[in-house]
Length: 386
Image (cartoon, rainbow, N blue to C red):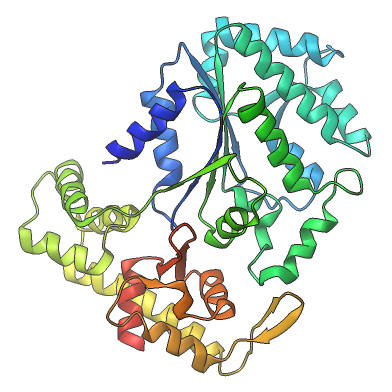
């Protein structure tokens, strides 16, 4: 169902590593599923070795958390020299099918306990971290293997609260330094630039559902000419209907009528996870009951959000100015979606759209400056309530 996206990413992998690729999209649009499908079923396993760093399960609030996500500690190793260990790991990945297969299931980078402990004992931890990774990737290159470094849910790294209240929380980044003056995030990005554009050692993909994070990175200019952005959107209608046909045969062992498919699409649009849930539930329940329950759930969540604004006034800080978010402004912003699924972001004030993105009501495409609801269910809820 993602043939064009798969083709694009495979084409990137066939070329020389040269850019950092940010793969982004609304919540549950299928970014992680797409990458895992490519890693598991589409890659030439004789050529590539993926390293999958998943920030999904933890909040990365300091350098130690970051390092813990990067590595799997080898408790048994007695090797003290990271170069010796990197060489042996590279040999194992090239020649050991059992060890290699683990990385195709999504493993972080293995590291000897002695080096891991040494890193944590230092005040400046970045040097050994990046030096070890760079040396390992270089050794793999020498053996004809191309590493693929993947960061999933990248916004949980450092930026987990970034822009959720806009630039006020950017102070958080300044507090997360590696040597008292180097920003943790940009230190990582500079390292990734060195791996890709400078040394061409490794392909790098960064996945994110946080469009405020992507907007920040896209607009800072720090990665200008060093990064590319790939939007993974919900399925279009034609693809959605084909997906429904496939799922109906797989899950229901039957076919859906044209009317059923049109009804499903009118409620959930092309959100893969919502289509899967709907058809799976049809094993036991009536279609109309399933869809009405899903819509009611979205309505109740949006209604609760708006009711909260009667008692709580959210505050957004932009360039050190504290701006209050008024319920009237939020409602007026949502009214713009009564007849349109997408609008120009300039139609809504920046503090209001930041608030609505933070609350998972809207999604921003920073490349086009377009806002839209996070899903068709949210869109339908907006139309019902406002």
